[in-house]
Length: 159
Image 1: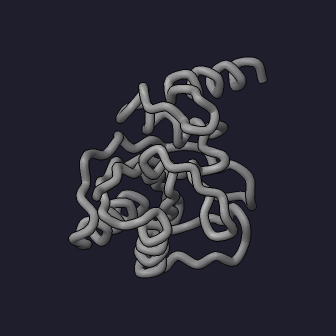
Image 2: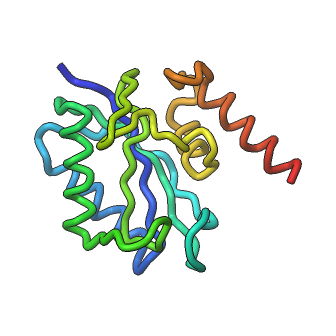
């Protein structure tokens, strides 16, 4: 049985477009993953962490036969193959692959939290997700991606 998953993608080191393209190519090489479509890329400011350059962000919609835990392991493997290291929270990175949604599953354990716990706060995730599926309902918050993006946009206008 296959599941539709959404992956948040970001890069702010080196050739960002190349890193995003390489990650997609590596992920697509697995027979258990089929790309449905990709959102446009957006250049965005970093959130938190040390001083760093702009990110290139997008979201991928994929179909997979893997479980959520297996799919996350695959995403981490792709990051590792592209040279991702994890030394400091919110540090600059060659590639960042976040599992945003996995079907309508809600998972909360020490290894995996789905939906991604901060996606509803992040324009750089919500805008490309909106490009793909504005009607997608967050299974915990019970709001559409469109509503969540409106909330983030409204909160940025106030500040």
